[in-house]
Length: 242
Image (cartoon, rainbow, N blue to C red; front, top):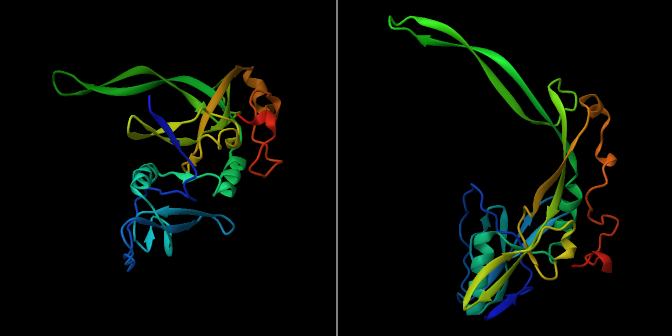
């Protein structure tokens, strides 16, 4: 099987599909086989950069500038996937990845359920409304540990992260997702591309007395590994590298 991997072609960043209009186009007169650098300000300190095959001065939060690179036919196919899937190159935008990981905190949810008697009306043969009653069951998950209908079932939610790689298999390009990891640095070398939302929630379920729920905190659980937020560098220690 002919399988090739494409990574770190150039610094690439997010292309997000939002309900937003595009501005006027630039007056670029370069040959078609190139892509321009676009930037998007996430915060005052963090800017995402990408190279995109479009000439809009402002597009979905990205601002066009004259800096560009030339690309070949193979690159064009790769950039189609990057643009269509909203990918960016993680190493180039490491500050964004790190700050996003740091913002994803574990949290608890509590299962509640209760029954109520509801009144509804039916028409009789004469067209009169006749009141009837029925028992209706409600249940769900809440972040309120003091809900009087809590049962004691508790979930600890945790964020895991993933990246992508672009491969050429039997002459066709496609995207592959990595496994879920606790720190993107575990896979960033093999799966160098990411989307703006590069996390997925997982959870473990526990059971307590409902009278204990108000005193619970995420620090009471030792279930999941977490990103190494004490180390802001792109490299992890050897025990965390996949």
